[in-house]
Length: 228
Image 1 (cartoon, one colour):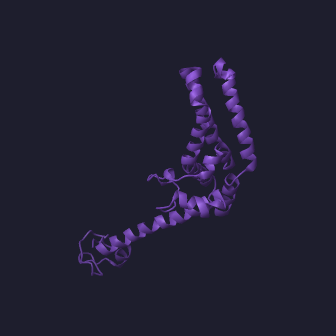
Image 2 (cartoon, helix red, strand yellow):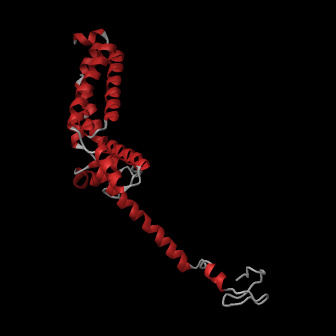
Image 3 (tube, one colour):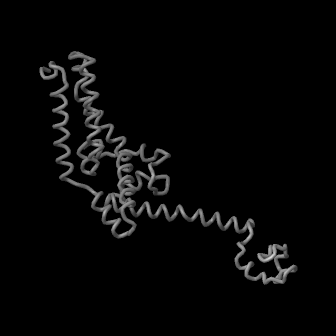
């Protein structure tokens, strides 16, 4: 050990400096433990315990945002083979899970879960593809495909990717709420208000989706479309 008075090297057991007689006990109290295999192992174990706490926090916040369906449905869909976390699943597990409500209800389910922006872009995208094919294929070829095909594609899309959309939506809103408040009670209340479900949103969203589809067809569909 080095004396902080004169810089003399002393043994670890020394109480007084062999050169100047300075008391080394204060230095011993301030000296951190050596990097032994045991200490390194303890540090590693401490770091390994942190993800567990993060997992519990993610579980609690997601439950507050989703509501009663989290424990008996979404938790298993999102984290079937992994621990809960507030990051979009890198292993793709949430992408590969299926949502029957998304398949059957489409935009109505998205709006019921308050994913209004996702619903808007899906309706916009499906109708844009529909209109492009109208102009490219012409009346006969387009009629043979049938407009029903696009409603099927719409339903399959929300069914296959619905859980992924909802997970991303939940994580985004949770992180936004966390940046606004650090108080646990206030945070949970804010998530409960921001998340959950809305029958009004589902009804209004469905009506607006139909109006958006009709409006795009009215403005951009070829003339023959209204004669079919």
